[in-house]
Length: 143
Ligand SMILES: [Zn+2]
Image 1 (cartoon, rainbow, N blue to C red):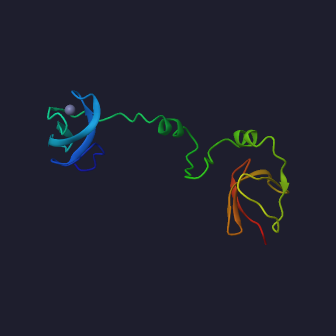
Image 2: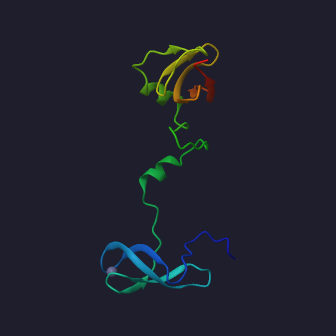
């Protein structure tokens, strides 16, 4: 079985893991695996002690918080954010009426006569990504 997603760092490779002696995240060399290829024993490069390898739990709070719902992934601004939340953030702004010949930039709030209120997420090359209450759309500008 190779479709196991566990840690399969090969023997003699370095892994950074918690050293039980040094009590720090340090470089360790992998001593051996179990038959599934999961790292079992490591040796600390710093103090030389050998100990069991314990895979780290994902501790980064960022990741945990973002995998909530929505399913749509974006590396830019978080489009899964509620439209409400977005408009709340832009509350102080006055929406600009959208026209194809208009000039817009990221963080502008626009008012589209069909789609209503929208927030410009990014704008370049005469196209901009705008989040509306139902979904994001790409609009042209500067035409
Ligand atoms: Zn150590």
